[in-house]
Length: 64
Image (tube, rainbow, N blue to C red):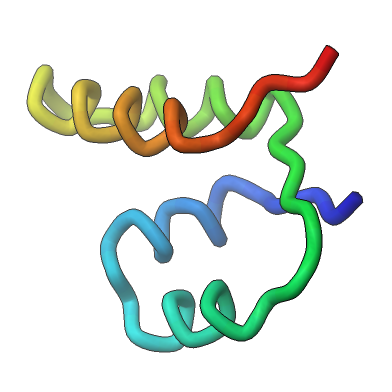
């Protein structure tokens, strides 16, 4: 299991080339602590960003 911080997720969500390259080359399970998901949602500046973040987070599976 590999924990990913919110700054990494933000760069992936922004489609920053270096972040996307890292993500494509990554082989393993990525885990998001609840606090990281919360940071991503609370950092949304408007309703559109909030929906985008919610959709992005929905692409991750939920643990038990």
